[in-house]
Image 1 (tube, one colour):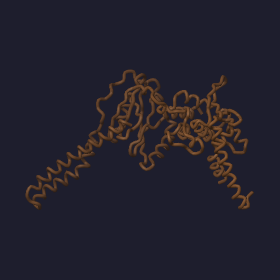
Image 2: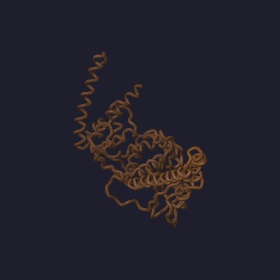
Image 3: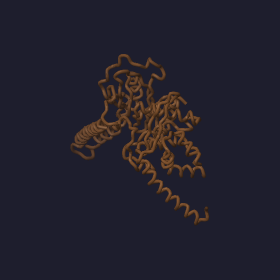
Image 4: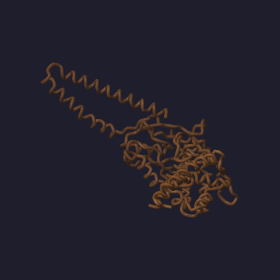
Length: 271
Length: 112
């Protein structure tokens, strides 16, 4: 029973419900269950679903029945809907890595106290490190279907919740989960002297660059073949023209990709 | 099949039933569930009741007050607000009109 309510409290906190309301809700539900008897899972349903139903949806998204139609002037508010408030404590850092090596980096930065809060729309891990009591985090990645991203992630959430894993973001076909290492190693998970925030924001491995080269190799081969046989059939300076064209196209492509990534990151920064 | 149908009927009207259960004064989750059970509506699980109470509170139709207890965990008491009473009257009338229409059609079909 305690396990169920512990998980519920975690979910409610994770959804921005203030601590005093979490405590009141748990007290109320505990009393209900002590009077009614039975198993909390049977009485209230799966933790993730129940927690989601206890949190008000975003404004303008009214539910069925008179309550939904009458608007939402409720007392229960998420912390992030409560108007101006002190920003959460700690440093924030966004970084990216390729799928080949991101788990290694997640482990490294988790050990340095970086807690992933989400994956932004530009594909970067948005991390926070507590200024007062930084602690170590563990991460895992699960493959999910792009078509059923939400359903798959919710199913994994329920499956992994008993082991204290909670979701911290999705990207394309991956769902990421985090767990405080304090649950496993106790006070040893606390960090006395955290390392400085890394200066880099991108962490790509040699394998990633080899993958890129493998992708671009057919294009390079095609250009080389064109240059080798071009002059013979087209005459004149075809090879030189093709080479210049390929270089200009390549530079253009790199510049375009850079601009698109920068634009996506700027948009994600504003979110 | 019969259980599914009852569940879906209840889903459409549970918020009104909860509002109606509060017209005699404030109450709390377990007591509301018992009131509805003893009225013949069957056992309503906490996982169904609490989200409804939460929505009614958000909409300002009920007011909730948490009271600590000396003997154990506290509990949240719910009471009907003037707006809740007004909504209950309005929506209750609509439900009764719907119920009358259903009865008429069933009666023509030889039921009842």
